[in-house]
Image (cartoon, rainbow, N blue to C red; front, side):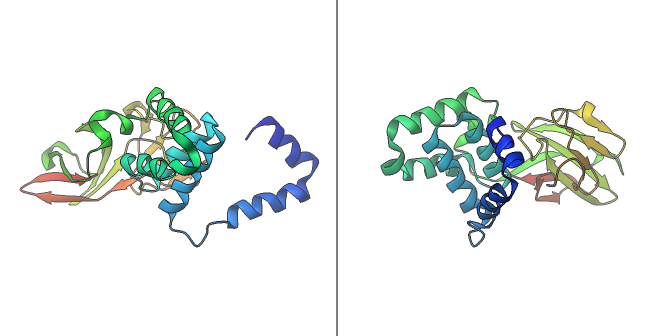
Amino acid sequence: MSDALTYLVKSRPEAMGHYFAFLKDAGTLLDPKSRALISVITKVYAQTERGLLQYTRRALAAGCAPAEILDALLMAFPALGLSKIVWAVDVLLASELEEFSLENVGVRPDWHRVGALAEFKDREAKRVECDGRGLFVHRTGAQFRVYDAHCPHERTKIPLEALSGGSLRCPKHGWTFDIATGECTAVGDRPLTRHECKIEAETLYAFF
């Protein structure tokens, strides 16, 4: 939140409360991906770099593929114009969002080999790199959970060193997660992004 908005919230709490209630209620009949894409478009229209990155990360967390985000911007061409779309792409390319690299942006979701089951110890978590994607894998007996190794808050990369016992703490803002369930246990309010997984021939696969 900007300093100006913080000031208005403190100086005019009643009026600003209605404003934020309106924002929260608007779009509740839309599915999360549609809401996220529309929010990204509004930030491109206003050309607010911080807002664009914030809502792009939210769109990714809501399940939007990078190509879907770019397609939404192109579909909004009559309202945005080419110059604002180019501005937005420049911002995304300058960010650390690996999803928008040329190697990843056009890739359709598919099954990826994560590793042999023997590589994952029972009741422990392991961080792996899988086809350009960082993942955390937690095993409980024959059950596996595979999480994206980015914090759902601002898509910050979470390193292996952030894992302590069964707790995973994002180094940027302190969002903390239970690695066994993916649930957020401190600071934040959203769980880790979980990928569907399957086992074939003693090998773990994840879908992303």
